Length: 323
Image (cartoon, rainbow, N blue to C red; front, side, top):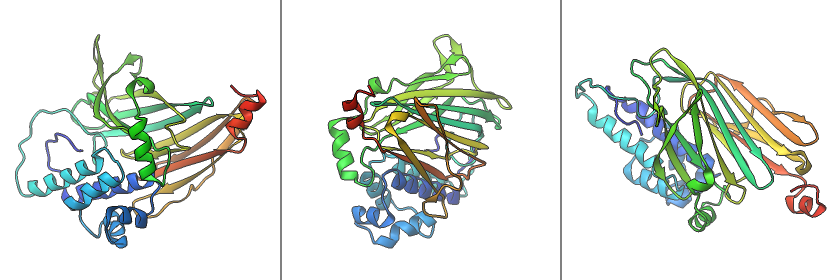
């Protein structure tokens, strides 16, 4: 997934990115290492060895992992990057003009000074709003930014989820994706389109002109999309794919649903564990907002917030208190 670059990606760096991708999708799908190995028909210890870096990526493993977790070729592309890095060892690479294609690659010139995500639920739909303050520390202008949208209604049960999205695929119309760079609307360009997984380039341009992020400059970008609760499970995960100075997440639910929220953190070196600090709660009687943040999150770390509604929606609707 590294796109065009003027210098070769180190092999170890590419292997680490592959391991992080496998771990990311395993966490998204709610699978233990043993469950994933069983689904792939691998020895139970093999997934652990790959994620820890003790075993290097293989073509067979990449194909099976991508298929088992319905990763939309994300894992496969990481393996292709690894193979390309091995091929380039010892081969001079001539510098050439290029644009930064994959900001998620380790060593990217982009730094996220502040990452703020908010999820709002109205009883039937989730609206996700992401705001990021980006700084270009490289030598080339940044002309686009890659985002991912991945849904899983039944985490821990990939077969059921795959069947669900084959019958009810996530569509662009329902997402209603919009993006802005400061006051300028950004054009969106689909890169990968799967039933439960989308990758989209947010372009620093629109019908009125271009506004690249030049070296040394910073800017806020914001994008938002909607997903019905029939396609979005009760979890929200943030993966740190760029050097990030501050990460913040807010979850807003109708108070009448009596929501409860908890979370876990997973890194390259540790299994999922409780968040080091609890989310704070503010309830005004109409909406209940949970806020959680952390400074300097580790690269490749994943922070997963989950929730349940102690007052079931069906019961609330029957009471006439929520519409």
